[in-house]
Amino acid sequence: MDNPSSAVEVLIHGANSLFILMGAVMVLAMHAGFAFLEVGTVRLKNQVNALSKIIADFAVSTLAYFFVGYWVAYGVTFLQPADQLITENGYSLVKFFFLLTFAAAIPAIISGGIAERAKFGPQLCATLLIVAFVYPFFEGLIWNGNLGLQAWLEARFGAPFHDFAGSVVVHGMGGWLAFGAVVLLGRRNGRYRDGRLVAFAPSNIPFLALGSWILIVGWFGFNVMSAQTLEAVSGLVALNSLMAMVGGTAAAWLVGRNDPGFLHNGPLAGLVAVCAGSDLMHPIGALATGLVAGALFVWTFTAAQSKWKVDDVLGVWPLHGLCGVWGGLACGIFGQQALGGLGGVSLGSQVAGSVLGILVALVGGFLVYGLLRSTVGIRLTQEEEFNGADLSIHRIGALSHD
Image (cartoon, rainbow, N blue to C red; front, side, top):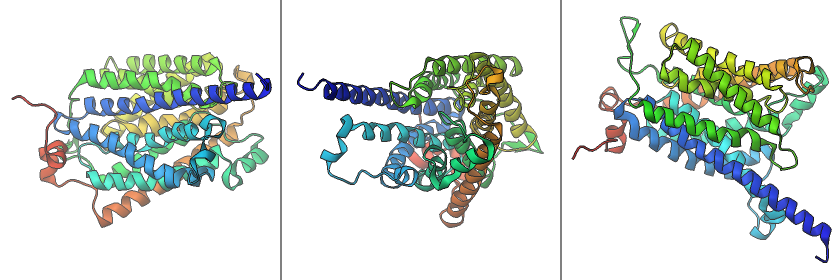
């Protein structure tokens, strides 16, 4: 080597590009988890629609984020010659790919809440608007310091809002956006009779479990690879993710009384909650975060369906919205050095950032879905819903008995 330092730089850039690319692929695989979790939960007549929404939403998300959303969040575009894009082994390109998979998780989350009665085309329009404008606006505030929000929080509370892997930025936003969509869409026909909940049993528990497992495995790319470079990677993130996942599972098993739907969503609740502080907490703090999240999901899902009559099919508002906000707050609690964490986090900033995330998502969700409802409509007709989204939209069922 004539220039060892240059060779080392190339090796570092190449390793970092490969590292974040692996993370992007793992999070991309999580979308299969979203798909099968929904397929297993909805009724048989809506399984094809569940699969179709996830992959179509990903395609629309990619276009929206590439041309608009990434520029809104980070001020970066790729409308330049390819020879300028390949600097540092194309690290900027795979970083976009990685962050795109986060952005595309937003409509995948919403899909589970609006299942079984939402129109297909209008949902893709909602995905376009959300991934191009609503999500990147908040993403840029938190992860790029846009509009000076993080600087203000640091000056006011002593530390910026900390969300390492997106408890609030991704999951909280997705859950609260879904809340607006679910409310505006209305309840499924026949879900409540004489004011009482009518059970719609999941169509396929093995598919539901498969979706949960795919998400669990991919989540270690979601969290660990959020370091974005090999130099910054930490085994603490991996262990904290594991402990929170186990805590969520145990709590959902106990509180949910062996219900397989709760049992397989419990680990996801724990993982949602630990995203924000997975790089700061002690593993016992992560376990506590997961335990609270698992119980919180079961309680709030049950209350939303039975008492509040919010017909959120997969419980994405409790799972991602409420557990995501709990994760933002838990980071401010268990990230403190007094509780074994690494410190450098403020509970005041965590509260402020979490509340802001809720507000942005609620306003964005009601605006986007309210606009679509008043123009093109967002709900299937009563007859289409009765026949199922598979036959009404896609003209084919999930199974053939020929």
